[in-house]
Image (cartoon, rainbow, N blue to C red):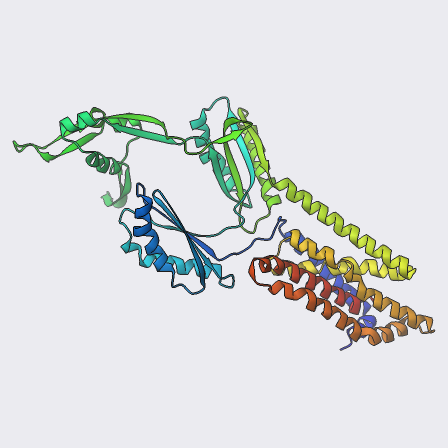
Length: 488
């Protein structure tokens, strides 16, 4: 079917098609996320196994090697990297890029669960995660208050701020930096323990059994059932110090086992843990927190939501002094604005060049209309494929912005030639569009054949250029539709 002839005979229908495409393209553009770089889905799986107190040698022989052997037979595995430290073994399984990340994660979890019984009994359950390349912090803040010390500020960040910010759309995690952790310290007195015959393991076992809050079954209360819970907790360090420790065996005279209070064999303090990290601002210790966006979210959207939430928090708590220490959102906004500005400038320059060479206002106007009508519908395909507005997609549009008017120029120039031959505009448009149609289609698909293969490149580069190739191809194809339907 000759699409150009149909469009010339039915101009209202052709115009309405592009009105709808433009409307859908604007909606698709507004729904897309603004990011610095596209999210990469790399099939790298990390296994973290923790055994407190174990030496690196023990972690290697008893944990790391068994986990390595378990995952070594998984299909598509490329490399295994293992890092062993005191009490922690971290294993990274690198798969071929063609393997689905979720499939790799499920297979690694299955392999680890099969050897879990062969690992040390006191080993904490291994934590298995896929590599998240979008996990870099986008904002960092420090917090100070005249009414709270470091311990209270640290808990305020962990509790209040984290819960408030994690509810912001686009925020994936809130991590405290610096500060301190509360610790109830039980310092055993070796001399008193030896005189009373109490061992450290006895104290440890009984302390670990204290904090208990479990289901206790059901009981009949009148004509109804009432759930029962078993509560065995202490609410303060003083209560813990008054707890009685059983000394083991019963007395030789047959009486009950002897008991001593914990404060008779140990000193109990409600204090803070030894700091393992520190945050400094201008050389001074501070309590800070970092915000990480979730995968697929926009840095710009997450940053605006975080700033709004913190402004509300400062209004409700005037004593808080929140200082922005690191900002990765503003550079993304600036790059986005600069890229759009360059894109518009490039389009205007392309139209200017058309006028300088053709010296025809009608051809210039048609070309200027063809440019946005080629770019805007491309956003429909980009949104459908899950792309975002980032450096790569904007680069693709910037590169093809001058190509998008080629088809329209060829169509208009050929129609003008037929008009100069004495034909009516209707007859000239019908014959010229039919005459040049195959050449225009061949030219467009040649350009698509150049750009689209970059979307199927292998390696990490292929992960980036996937969005580049498809964006360029969609825009060029949209320019063909404009040239064949709207331009004539």
